[in-house]
Length: 493
Ligand SMILES: Nc1ncnc2c1ncn2[C@@H]1O[C@H](COP(=O)(O)OP(=O)(O)O)[C@@H](O)[C@H]1O
Ligand SMILES: [Mg+2]
Image 1 (spheres, rainbow, N blue to C red):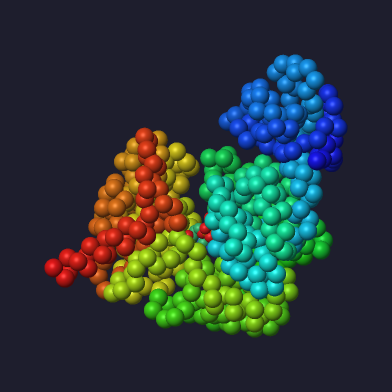
Image 2 (cartoon, rainbow, N blue to C red):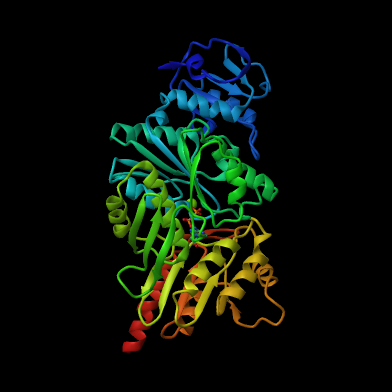
């Protein structure tokens, strides 16, 4: 067992008390997780003050406490360290506890408002051809056969390091992880040294946490500031904020995108709904041309594919391996994924911000022959400013809208819908309102005719709907399948 003193290596300590040579069995910031001989880090949170839980932690067996502020009372004999920054200490102590396991990995961080999950999954699939690759993000923590569910896009440091220790023992050498801007502000990945960071896009999501766009962008850039001379940044040059990120870099970088300035860009490309592959493209790269065929759908995914190609190329993966992994890769559940293909098609997608919806609908527009019918809503209790923007974008980019509920949480679903409607142009008529999501999907399907594409947006892989007083099981895929079965029966009757 390591001692508290050993765990505190590299941490700025202001004051200390008690015996720091005690052995520590674990480190946590959650008093409910404390076990015998653990160290409890009482973090001053945004909603919770960890100092209030010191008693509980000690009752559960904590033999030491670390905090940024003085404890609320005296605990005779308790081993305690006061640190300059509690979150930094949490990351550092956890990293030390797990023998700085992340230093043994080639680490790639993916950040940006959209595309993180898709790029992370795609890139892991490519890198797996070279060496076992661990993947962390919205889909959980995965490596080979091992999958751990995740509740956060970027988990807390102890979960990350415990997972890496396990996968390292299984031979994993690479890590590809989604790095949310929130996690950067909270120093969750402070002790992971990234060799590459990918910047996908930037728009105003999470404005409930980051009060201003500047603050949000600054927090995303934190990941790029960590890169050193020999590291690489991979930048989506099509994003208007790309120059700001590039300006901050102290490392090498390559850009990707549709722009003629991009280092990696398509010379030719074709999108389709019918064929075996939905994207076929010929890419130009500094290492020559690369032809790719993919089951992924639409322009935004060609952008994601280019991000993965750029990163894999930097890592030294051969073009053959890159192309083969891409051809095999199937859409991530809930990310531009077909739930039904027939005369008309139904596609499920996780887009839940105005920018993502815009990119999604514009991507789909290039492939549909008939009408584009969008079923969508906006979440309750989260960023409200995006609601009218979502209404505006969807009304401008789809042919018909079915406005419905998407996790209303504590709010009144009709009120959320009214805020979405506020973004419609005066006199706009091509929509209906249906609060019940299942009925909304049914109405969209009833409307669809040959050549149409129904896109059910917002929930993606989620299998629940959160209301004020309850959470119910709800899965867009299941609903579409059930409704299509019902139609089949009715047509045969
Ligand atoms: N490169 C992109 N640019 C814009 N929108 C994208 C991009 N990639 C994906 N999206 C949209 O964002 C949604 C979420 O994609 P995902 O890969 O889960 O991103 P994230 O993990 O960043 O939330 C997708 O369903 C799609 O509609
Ligand atoms: Mg994600």
